[in-house]
Length: 165
Image (cartoon, rainbow, N blue to C red):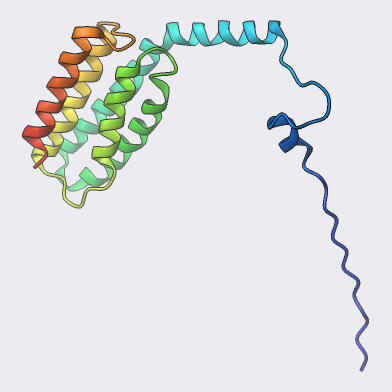
């Protein structure tokens, strides 16, 4: 029995989107001044709303921290939720003028990434991170925070040294 010959054709299309995003497309690629102004205005509006927005995330972190305190047997799940929220927060703070939130969230993210056993001391360390975040948002400590920012980070580092053993 003879099998029929099958013809297979491959079509390779040039990726024009890649050229455009890399600035390699023929002709001039530019963004209009109006579009840039609109984007900057939208970013400024979002920056104004950021403290209220991030306060909601801090409340979610507090809820997960409370679960760590109340249900030690479910700490792993709560710590994973904390890790996901901290990951989101660490990418946002600097964008909206709150790099201290990014610093604190990055520390919390690294701390909560993978823990085999979650002790009471480590739960206290989560609380220290939350306290520092609340202080930044309540005080509207934007930018580096100057002396206040230094004190907050120093206090957090002291808590890390005390509780993370």
